[in-house]
Length: 226
Image (tube, rainbow, N blue to C red; front, top):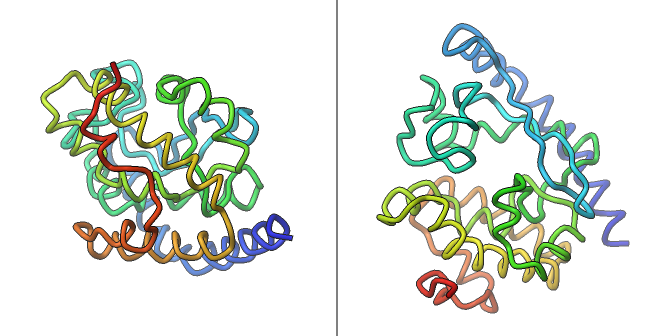
């Protein structure tokens, strides 16, 4: 029953969002088409439900060849590969809006573990890789909220970006996603949607740890894996 209601809500809510946001998205489409490299949408292979690949849809924020430049799959704060509008789209999370189309198609849900590319996915311990996508990946989720400013964390770590991600971020993010799989419910999903909107408006808020008391210990963030 949970999965049926979740899918029905995903479809109806995403359809309504598409209709509401279309007038807002048109200026962004025009600006992207007229700036940078002239492309609007970015499709990338991500790992989804039951570890199957799908193409995620986002507004373009970086140079087309960015995966083969600089830090590759990891984006830093003020990354030189960003398009003129890219920094604004990423900071406001507007670049994620086209994923509504992924939700309509059934590749994604509004709430779930964040879908990753191979390299960041493989940073998870094997036990997490085998289980994290028993839930359909989401536009937002507990990991997305806690690591909403991941780019800043990596940029300020003073360590090589991929090393910091693999040693510090991946273990805790994986633990958060597994927490979601163990506690997912309509209540948890609606709370995550509400908190997502809240932290966009108030990015310094720690509401997520107040709303969900049983989240994995944040000490994992300061204790790199040996």
